[in-house]
Image (cartoon, rainbow over all chains, first blue to last red; front, side, top):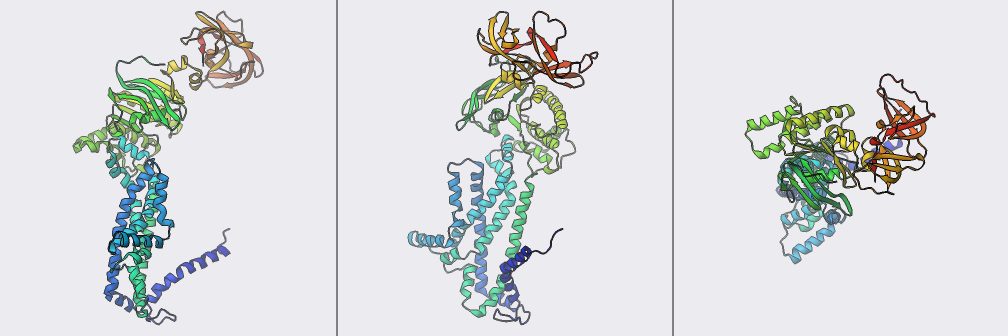
Length: 264
Length: 368
């Protein structure tokens, strides 16, 4: 006999509501015909979406974020793949220390890195703040995620596959191209998606390191001072929520497919 | 323990050594393998046989010593440039490729004409009896089929030497026996030198022209199956290949026969040995179970006799197996009696006293 309803089930439901309830209010209010995000709901409207579409500077910030996130995802994954191969395939001297150093951004608060980078860039290197500096800092914080995802996949498949390729006459590059890369491909895709999402909604680094061209989170933060802009923000937020959910689910599905292929 | 130089040597190992930190996985190994030979390296896990195979493939480098392959020194030659191909223990079938793509993997780099590549792949698949499986994906293959793909993939490159790392280990008993027969006839038909690694002595004895018995990174003996069974150099080989009864004692006289004082058993005689033995040495007189017979009458001269108590007898159809406890010998003596069709089985009852005899010429004196 399986009990359907236990105190733990109730706990799980409450937990989920607490976690995701506020998030779900955002799409709800984005369709509500009221400038203020308050109950009771007044009526259904799409005008917030229309005002969002008409807001040029907001769309500009969205475009900035999309460009930065795409480039960051590609760079972090491209740098992460050889790193992950080096850490899983070779007995590196000090490999453990290297891995630990690479994982630092996961545990050190990003505000510390942001301040440190700001000082280095502005005071020491005299670099002008721009989307480039934001992108560089995002590559830095995305790298540990990319390396982790790629390493878990590389550790998952039989190393004798690469040896077999060498034995059959392929050199290092040929083996990478014909065996390692195709087998690591699901992880490459999920690394790209994950880095894109991380960069896209990253606020702290972007806030400190962006110049006159803001990314979307920085722009939205600025908009919060104007209550009448809020519904437009809600509309955009709802769209982003939808797209990120799709991307994360896709990345997870890809990762699982990769794991299931392993025992074959 | 060196073999004499062979007329047509394909592989020549000289003082090959491989250290992993403080441990010597391969500890100064030298031997030659002849062209076209089916050569096995046999030993328990951790004896260095797989490390040796990987050094032949170029997947591992010796710490010291030299490897010659067809006369060419292999130091610094990477795996992809060696005229060897390997069948891996896990088979290492590329999971993202189908059977044809797996088999033709090593040919792509040669940039053959499409027709020729196809002909070679078809020929290799025919050789391992996998016609009709061309488009199968790697996960749709059974263990036996994966093994055949691995063989075809290696053979299609026409290596001078095929290296096999326990390729039958993952198969069930019946399939393994089938594949043994096939592997042997395959080797004869392609004429390629096979170097085969296994821990299964029966497999090595069935397949090989010669076998190197290894332990602790060293080669104990290299010989044919018959040689290893009939003339083991040392106790370790004697006990690893088949069953061997050992009687400990001290050498008392050396002539055309060796006399050994085996304590309470009395004096045992054995043929003179090639090994350096002097009077007073502690040795074992070794004798195979099937060389022993149950003595009913009086012993003939030139025969060793020991007396013991029958502890167990097992009827095995074509023969019976007796275990006899002989006072002064730690392990029960194993006796294998062939049924000649007239003798009824189970003549002796457990607990009864029994005399075992063997001609002096059937024994071997082992020093270690």
